[in-house]
Image 1 (cartoon, rainbow, N blue to C red):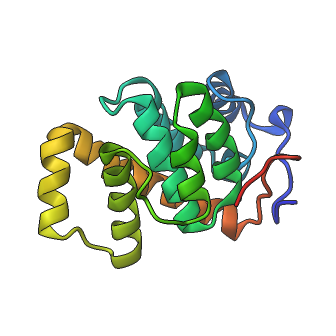
Image 2 (image 1 turned 30 degrees about the horizontal axis):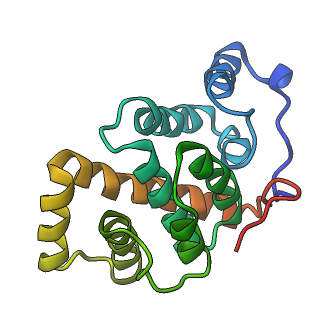
Length: 179
């Protein structure tokens, strides 16, 4: 149960109801991190806009995005986004071996070179707060400038989501497995 009360859409001002409606239009409702963020509707709107960019406009393929999100959720120990994105990752074709390696925070030897690179980027950035030159050059060669920037920004975005759900004690959806 979250530390914050659930917001009733009907109790919101009309402008804030419009934010709610924009968020709900492309998600399974206004819950999880957005259940928290809707306490500040203008912020929720901007966070949703960034997430919508990744979902609908990013050059980074969906299978890569979901792996980056799961790796970030795992590093942040954020169970809600893990549960949501493990399911989405499976829907878009993220390999089970990659999901399980990230879930157990294990070695990456069974991953493809690209999967390993994406997880290493996230782990390195979130554990050391820097990107060593060799890893940067490898990522730039594999992903190109746009996808590399998107990967790093996506890890940053899901760090925000992880901090939000952890700070406000947002539990994963019922019966969802996590790590």
